[in-house]
Image (cartoon, rainbow, N blue to C red; front, side):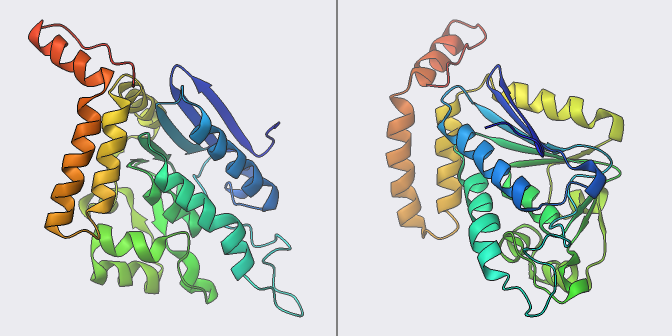
Amino acid sequence: MAFEHILFSVEEGIARISLNRPETLNSFHEAMHLEMHQALEQVSQDSSVRVLLLSGEGRGFCAGQDLSDPLVKPADPMPDLAPVIERFYNPMLEKLSNLPMPTICAVNGIAAGAGANIPLACDFVIAARSAKFIQAFCKIGLIPDSGGTWFLPRLVGMARAKQLAMLGEPLSAEKALEWGMIYSVVDDEELQAEATKLATHFANQPTLGLALTKQALAASQTNDLSAQLELEKQLQSQAGASADYREGVMAFIEKRPAQFSGK
């Protein structure tokens, strides 16, 4: 598939997806949704991919949904937003959240509406100092979607989640870091370099072990202690049978850098 509204590449274990509608602050319309779904599907099926780096072109990460898109633009009769959520946003967030490899989102400028919640489905969010996270839904009579009502209470607590969702005030990158919502904040000119540095690190790490770690941490949100201990036993058995475990131990014993294959 030829991409027009996103940039997509895979090189040296790093898959890169960059939203590419800078004239609209990378807001989503139907064609961009379709390309994003195709790119995420390719990432999930490509065994060479060991980390995903998501970003946005231009002066902002993503302004959410393009409200001029006929799919959502108010008309007579009013559009039903449920099919848009079901067809596009929910599968994208589930696919992104469930990818087995580490996922990184580099956020610059505005991250509003769905664009404020898509990064939260990633494992690591690196934000430029210019970044602002805005739950803009309440400004137009909607509720936070794209996982916003799920991610926010878990990351920042219910009181702060209500503040963000019901007031719709911009949250600075520094405050998002202070609240535990994101991983790090860097100067704008360092954003891509720092995100690439982290992606390169993960592209050379024991990918299977990291995937199993993600699986265990996700399960911990609903498991009781006994169930989680049992899951740890099962996943550790899988990890212990891997080539990466063998290499990691041998490198430790031989006092040399490990050369992980991701298997």
